[in-house]
Length: 331
Image (cartoon, rainbow, N blue to C red):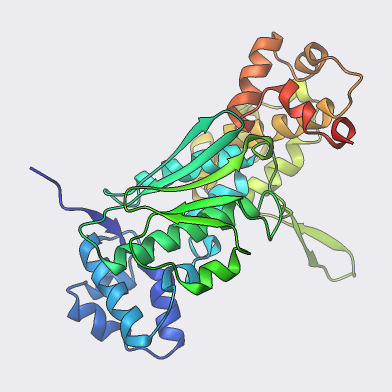
């Protein structure tokens, strides 16, 4: 028996926020489309995907909103997703994290990656359930989110050379204009955004730490637990980072409490340590006089093979491939 596709209510939140801003009586229209009003208070609630499609399609038509999904997409509106992106050490890790995140958000949504030669394809497929404009709006929303994530690791106006959208409707002018005339195609089967492999090792561009004014005019770090741990652990030599148990003791709490608090911030102790080690690896690899075996041993790896596997899993590149992308090698 085929399962009824369901999705988390949080996927509707960006659409609802936009509609409320323009004065739409959202509650009345949610009820009309058989969506429970309880979703407004519980983003983790699951609702029928078809009902969300119908609601978004109806609102786009009633309010005359062209490219609704593309217009409102912003990964920062999804707290869990934005935390996962900001804590990823590389673009490659962020993309893999999004793929795992999607599986928990909708039973009919699949986001995955494929590698062919020098290109990685960031693919998506949602529940179509017929030629529904609502499905197209969500596909445009996913596409914009995917692009926004990539831009946070490259540059704000980065665009791919080509892009296949998973839609059946006519491509809105809004999207055409915002992508600066790149080659765009459409498919009812799959959306696919190509990314050069040389960009996968890029690190998150937004600074992790902010500063908050203190009473004496100086600044103090304004960090959550994850930011504090990263800030402190980076002060240790690569091969002598404190263990999780040691950090738990020094922080004055239990290991279980520390683990829970990090999970609430969308990360883990292991992820923080991996990010620090990756950052240190990149810094050492930029010293071209160091051999890769020396970099591996400085970081505490038992062999260059272990280091290469670690680096490849995070960045999508081997250490040698990463070095070919450095300006000193390309200039």
